[in-house]
Image 1: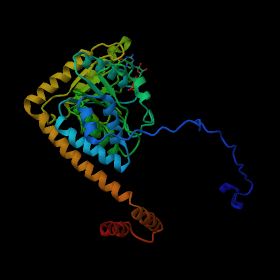
Image 2: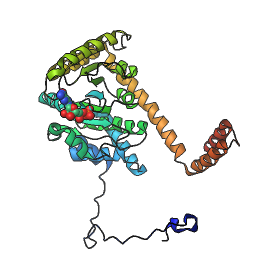
Image 3: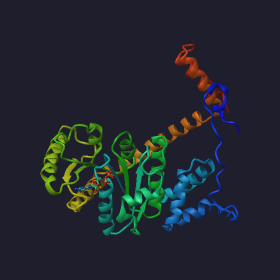
Length: 362
Ligand code: GDP
């Protein structure tokens, strides 16, 4: 085909056609037919048995954009729901470099030493880091990745935060049905994703660093307020004193916040993920939190509220998708957008026209 830039409008520029590349895959190899998907019931059976291959396949369906995959995924989730809920869901956040991977590796091994199984999920809507490749996360968590009791799954690939978060929320259900009794949900502490993680976990751990002298600056108040525990990493070598100073500063900063609804006062600890110092203390705090909120009923209330939140989030997301992915709406939106930009129509009447079209459909 003639290249578009060879048109007279692009005079002075010629584009030569490239050399035909030999096929990368040997064309004489017989194409293997992909095995058809097992039914939802078969997959549920595999998940309930704790079969990791089936669990991975189901998570892939949850993450898929294909409507037929989504339909099976929803059926699987529905069937797994009665077996879900029996895990400790722990959110872990911190800026890049705070030591999340290093810490999750050692926290994870610590948890697994006590028995049970651990799933590590992530929410990273930008997901440039791994581009959805498992390798990325496996190399980040070296020890855990070879542990038979651990299931590590990178963030669903880039998309809207709401969509990525919902998929992770659904993956939690599948992991719990597969017998994972500890779930870590990791997120990069630089944006809205903390709120999404906070809305799906029981305990929210904020990993901080010391040493800059202005620790409290640049930390969004909102994130601190969400934390049930703040842990200052890299308290090792000549960084110990600075970590302790940061601990004092965080403690006094937390006093300025109102008592959280849970009745639990967030604790501030120092530790070193790399040298594995203070890991047990961090875990002890998390154990105490669970005992506390189980005893005062907050655990159940929070889970119920989260379930309601996800219902509305899912409705919002599906409505938005249905609206914006409708070809007629897309066409009209493009047209209305240029009219609004050209001052030919007001934003409000343009919006009303598009919505009128949407509501008149079906
Ligand atoms: P992430 O971006 O939050 O996942 O952080 P990483 O776990 O990749 O850690 C970032 C860097 O900090 C790496 O070079 C780690 O080796 C280092 N690091 C992590 N934890 C510690 C620690 O406890 N002490 C020290 N000194 N370095 C650490």
